[in-house]
Image (cartoon, rainbow, N blue to C red; front, side):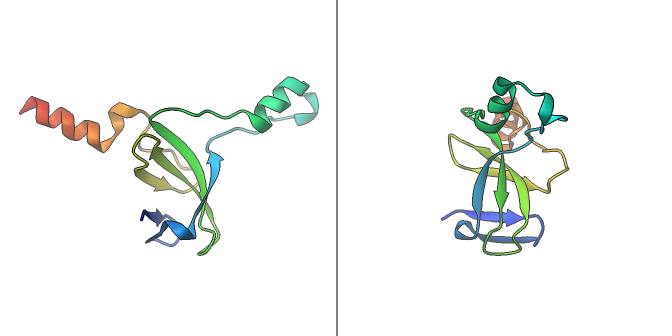
Amino acid sequence: MLHIFCPHCGELRSEEEFHSSGQAHIPRPLDPNTCTDEEWGNYMFFRDNPRGLHHELWIHAAGCRQYFNATRDTLTYEILETYKIGTKPQFTDKTDSPKAATQALGEKV
């Protein structure tokens, strides 16, 4: 079972209390009325599906009911960090992950 840290509650809780809500950091068009059908369709329906680190929007549905972001490795399902909406992620690519840092230190020794 996965345990997820809620940045609002400040507690590590069971994954059963949370729901993923898709990709994080998707900017809404400033003026939706001027968007073409293609631009609006891309905003509404098309999402990244990377192999590796991915920033996702989550909700603590059975707890505080607050949304937050999480950085998750889609290969290992490991959640590297959770952070409140409006803050920047600490991990932005594979070289930033704790595992990569540990491996790099091991190689230097």
